[in-house]
Picture 1 (cartoon, rainbow, N blue to C red):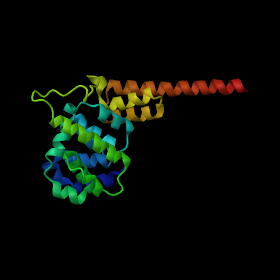
Picture 2: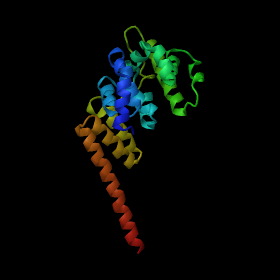
Picture 3: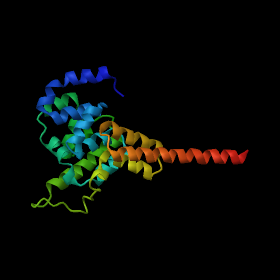
Picture 4: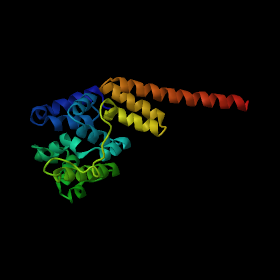
Length: 218
C-alpha cells in the first residue's frame, strides 16, 4: 500500500496530466493503489476499473473482464484508442504503452516488455480480443452474445460486489471479506454490506464447527 506522502508526490508529478488525459491520470494513480482514483474510474465505467483490478493480480477481476460484454468496456477502449500522450507514456510507463499498442494491433509490442508477469500478458490478450470484437461489431451496434456473455443487471451487477460474490461461491471467505470491504470503501452500498455480513457469518460458522470438533476429541 502506498503511503499518503508517496501518493501526493505522484499526484504532483502528474498534475499536468489530469486536465490533458484524466483517464490516463486516474489509471496510473489507481495502479499505484490510490482508492480515490479507483473510485473515479468506477464512476466512469466498468472497463478501466476492471482493467486496473485485473492488472493488480485479482484473478476474479480477470475472469470478470473476460466475461464482460465488449460494449460495456467502451471507456477502456476509448482510452486505449485515443491516448494523446503516447510519447510520454512510452518514456515513463513503457509497459502500459506496449500493452496499449498490442491491444490496438501491434502483435510484437509485448516482446519489448521485460520481466512481464503472466497476468500482464493474460489481461493484454483479453482486452485485445474484446477490442477487436468491439470494432468488428455490426453496423447496428449489436455484439454477438456468444462472444460477449452478459452479466446481471442492476445493483447486483456492481463489479466491486461481484468480486466478493465470486469469493463466496468458492468458499474463500477471508478473500470475500476483503473484496466487500474494498467495495464498501469505494462505494458503501447495501449489497456490499450484506455481502460482507454473509462472509463474516460463513467464517463464524467455520469457527463454530471447528470448536465442536475440538470438544468432541477431548
